[in-house]
Length: 158
Image: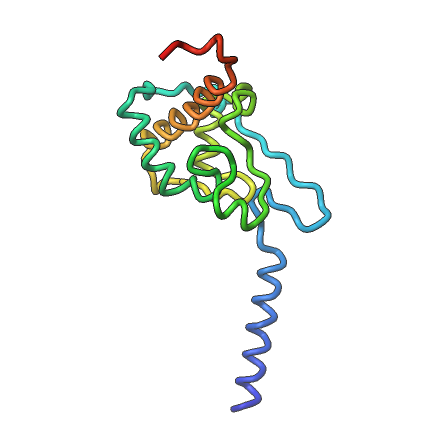
């Protein structure tokens, strides 16, 4: 009986080790390897945001972003969230207008919905409208960053 139990345990450990070794990663790569190219389907990239960037949409986007994104991307979108800092992740500064200027809303939606590299996907646990709200909210970071970069003479008087 002990011999059977030991044999089954060893087979289980072997199967577990093989499964871990062959487990697919989402865009992640092993140390030293070149990361896989991340392609967004053209149809997804061309998708237009059906949700206007109203104050209500931005408020909903901010709430969802606070739950799911700020720990890595930072409360203000600067890429300096606690998890990103602790894990030494190189996050984009979304307050810099240049960061997202070449990304369509459809691309942002796709990345949030499907995930990218180590970023987990929202998937079906969040309604599409809420993801569009998050796209609007993420876009608002760049607007704040652009306003902060204007020289003093260009800023509106108080």
